[in-house]
Image (cartoon, rainbow, N blue to C red):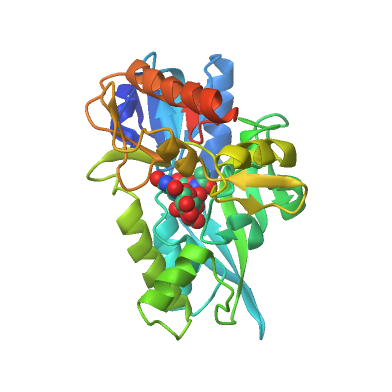
Length: 340
Ligand code: EPU
């Protein structure tokens, strides 16, 4: 294992901001995690786990510890029956390459999550989702190193306690587990409607009437390319804010002034309000604040155009949060994780 020192974290996150990491190393083998954890513990060094860096913001002070970049490979068929195939995948695999492989095998369950940047191990942390699918729908278990009990564990779907953009890995047990592989149970059935509104609209407009894993994947790739900037060209972390969750009375209050507000009934008395809509209504779409551009095709995305520090991003972010609070009395939250 080669350990690098004083590494600018900004070269490893798609937002391209932030200071240096004291140490950084690539992890290719599951066993190395236990070794490196013991060493770091003996030296009192904190550990941070990084996947593809596409949902991660680094602060200007950097990280005074060791960052592990998980590169563990693997794609193994575990079970197969008439209806489904179960596959175990290494945490270091690239998410979209895996989606492509499963689509090529005519399996469904993750095809609508095509073209999401990042790694397999990062996917369960924020329960990634798009166009009506989320990883919680197909993930049956995962393997991880438990830094609390210092042992490798197998966690079931229930153990992960998934909800919208949330799991134990970014809430209750944040920092405790290092995910080494995930196991997905994918269906052999073709995707069937009803599809997510904007996906169905695209399919109709383009006269796509045969719904296969491949046609859905192709459609999603096209929609995303039109609404989300490619991080290789424009520095960004995808959706920068979570969609807002409002109580019925809050929504009613907003509806008095904005009867056309788009909402999604979550079925538990709560309603999802698209934060992109709130930001657009507040007049921020296309605006440049301290080098941070509110993306003109999708106000939920912040693009780092010329910001040089985390501080610049924080000013832009707080300005947006404050104005949304003032106008709508809704508190919006940052979506990407921070290294700390
Ligand atoms: N909208 C606007 N203005 C905007 C952007 C959106 O009015 O500038 C409104 C539109 O009315 C639209 C609604 O917001 O009907 C919802 O927009 P969209 O369907 O594009 O999805 P989203 O809620 O903005 C979420 C995820 C995305 C995911 C898409 C598609 C979150 C935080 N974001 O975005 O995930 O790709 O749905 O399923 O849940 C990501 O997490 O990085 C991400 C890109």
